[in-house]
Amino acid sequence: MAEIIQKDGTWVFDGDALRLTPGRDKNVGLLRKTLGELAVPLHSLAGVSFEQGRKSGRLRLRLRDGADPLLQATGGKLAEGDDPYVLNVESDRYGVAEYFVDEVRNALLLDEVPSGAVDRYLLPGPAVPLSVSAGDGTATFDGEHVRLEWNWKTEDAKAAAGPRSLAVADLASVEWHPAVGLENGYLRFGVRHAPTKAPPKYDPNSVELWGFKKDPLMALVAAAVQARLPHPAAPAADVPARSPKELTAPDNTPPAEHDHDAQLRRLRELGELHRSGVLTDEEFALAKQAVLRRM
Image (cartoon, rainbow, N blue to C red; front, side):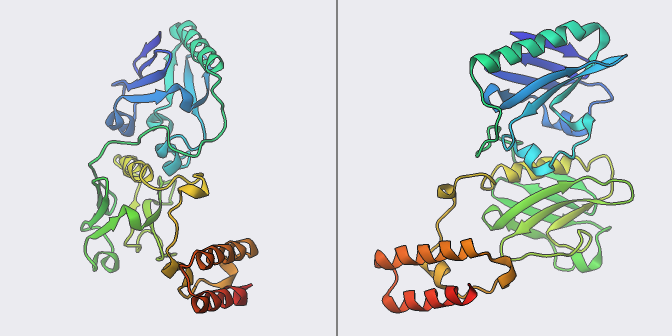
């Protein structure tokens, strides 16, 4: 077992997983403190490094692409104080940090853990229920529905429709972005079949963030939702099959958004349904003609 204890936090490695516990130092961000202890399986790691500095150094874990819903939802935009995979190390503990790195690297080699991307989440994401108030609203997530409620600072046009309740099954994406300089941040939910280009200030599926202390906590809501959405790299077999009604329904998506390969796949799906008897000859002919016209 390897262990390093710092004001910034404590990291423990037992051979199978790392336990990352945030410290109480003023440099530890609110997100890390709220997230609490984090268990990181060895097979979710792509690598570990130690960067020395004059007065302090940093231990840094690198996770395999797609392994963590928090990193997936935040897109590498977390501030260093909120990043749970970075530990500040005092200069008198450099030897311990280097030993820690050697132990983790040796375990990765012995277990032959690949460093490539994964097609499923290897960490569970933040626990639910979650409720965070920041910016112009409150986001609450119970594992199945996201509820957005507005405050007195919300734009009238956005607040007029009242609170929003979004089922996970209706969500196509979730994204968190911090406020940077004069640009406000946001927590945005992409709803299936309802794309919008409205800025977060007016988008009823977004919470606008202004760079205050609680903004990073909205990233926890984003991560908890992300963990329950289909993985972006999941094999096609993991994607729910469309019903015959969905396949034969008129397709109103602008042609520019289609490509030739997508149309060919649609024809193959229709052919399989026709051969299995799900679609009648007439239904198959009509659906096939609709696809061919778009090619």
